[in-house]
Length: 150
Image: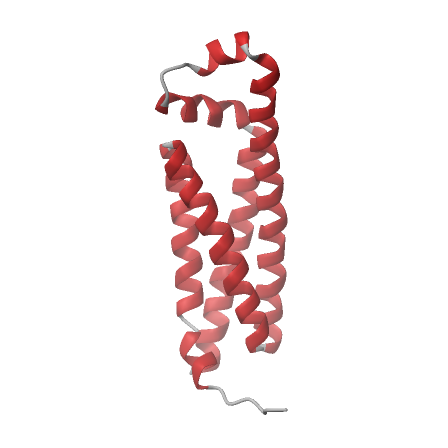
């Protein structure tokens, strides 16, 4: 029964990693759309800023592209660790997956809230929530499992 919960949680995080790769592509490809939405939270519009501060505006675009690339790499890492958990069920892999996912999804979620971008808040909130669910399902197995001490 507990092994099935481990596999179920790992499958959820596996698909969550694929979801993170897709959102990373969304961040990178649609950075202009994301910046228009993010600039609604301040008094200046993105088009005005882009026209009169084009060099700085390109830094914002590169920032969104960089965040997207980092999300893609973290998504691939989550997929790899989830697949490893499905095959071996090791506790250290689960801990590494837990730390990388919580920091990655939590950071993106908080930044989206600070930018007041509703689209990114919803996308990152769904990702963070599904990751947490995927981590909570097998937690009992890892807490009860006995390991040899060296």
